[in-house]
Image (cartoon, helix red, strand yellow):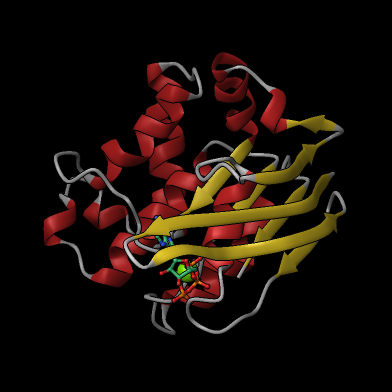
Length: 196
Ligand SMILES: Nc1ncnc2c1ncn2[C@@H]1O[C@H](COP(=O)(O)OP(=O)(O)OP(=O)(O)O)[C@@H](O)[C@H]1O
Ligand SMILES: [Mg+2]
């Protein structure tokens, strides 16, 4: 379903060009959960961002269901991204929105109507044990709670592919087993997931 072919990503810095992802190829089958392991700074997050083109590779191809994402127009890519959810390593919540509103916003971008947005956001927040914080702003949430909102936001749209960048690193042992074990049933339409 996802094929990465000879992907290379470099960054320019005052000390010269730094290659974070160097000629990486991999193939991820539909319906599987894959992980990528590496030291801090090895390029895991960069490679993950190469898949949804939040970071466009300098070379190589990123194919999803046979379509090279690098050849899509901005509009086509926006549409394709509705199929690709992401849980960010640093949460990326909007600080001026409550937990519930953060989850609802991703559903709004996916074209879901207001009543359904409310219902799904409440449902996913319940799955990550955060119903009581639905009206709380990120500044008043703990690190693990913020991460759980980010998990709920990614799951709510039921993406075909879920990219998870250390999705439970800030979540302690309490809610972690429940939220993780519930994901597959919560996202029955998800065909493939990639995380680390
Ligand atoms: N936008 C950027 N500009 C310059 N260098 C970058 C940029 N993004 C990442 N890098 C560098 O690329 C390398 C890989 O970073 P990346 O975030 O992909 O690592 P990682 O494997 O996810 O690490 P960690 O386990 O600490 O999250 C690092 O050396 C980092 O400093
Ligand atoms: Mg990382």
